[in-house]
Amino acid sequence: MTRRRVIGGLVLVLLVLALAGCVPNPDQMKPIDRTDPGFWNGYFVIPLIDILDATARALGSYGLAILVVTVGLRLLIIPLTLKQMKSSKAMQALQPEMTKLREKYKNNQQKLQEETMKLFQKHNVNPLAGCLPILVQMPILIAFYQSIMHNTPLFEADFLWLQLGEADPYHILPVLAAVTTYLQSVMMGMSDNPQAKAFLIIMPIMIFVLSFSFPSALALYWVYGNLFTMIQYYFIGDKFKAKREGVTR
Image 1 (cartoon, rainbow, N blue to C red):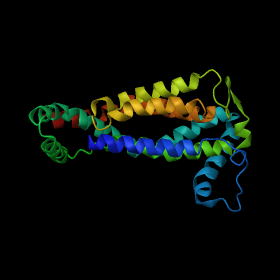
Image 2 (cartoon, rainbow, N blue to C red; image 1 turned 60 degrees about the vertical axis):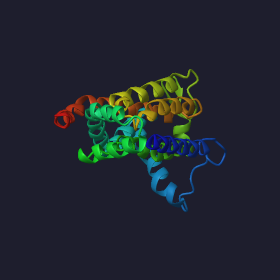
Image 3 (cartoon, helix red, strand yellow; image 1 turned 30 degrees about the horizontal axis):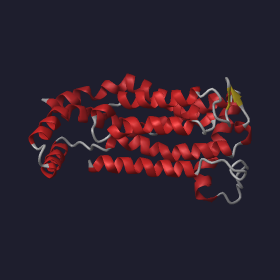
């Protein structure tokens, strides 16, 4: 229960921070002063603006540029994603033993926590490792949002039925963002990890609600990223199968 509360608290804090920076105002829609951008804009927002602009010029579309940049960002966090996969598989393998512990110590929560931690230590499993990629993506998400708001050409660009600087008028992207977030979480094994189960429900709901006011470009980034992760997991997810079987023996 303690870990679940920690996870829930982190999500709520990140949600509040995201909401605080997601209310458009005239200052947000102005180009950034590059002579004195500050640390955040200088190292996160401006580089994303420049990368998106250069990619859009090469491809002739900001929608495609978002796809390419999204894939590039996800490739950068592959080590964390692989760690998440390993943790999820290990947690799945430990479920039978954890169930036995819960039954054995159902009337002694302190002893249950102690024995559960011993089990994790014995098999070198970190139950919170599966949450790392999501936590890492939150600053990227906020920086990506700000790079859109400060990028006039992207903000005014069209892609398919979307105007990238405005929310999807048909609410298709919010649904896709929520559904792909849920499917990705299930695919990564969060449904089998009691310590990460809170993310299984909280994250899709949070993304669905925020996507109603997000610029379409940001929701598009999230959908692209989820699809990339699911494809990635499809091809390399069995990498940890042998390790999982080794734990259960």
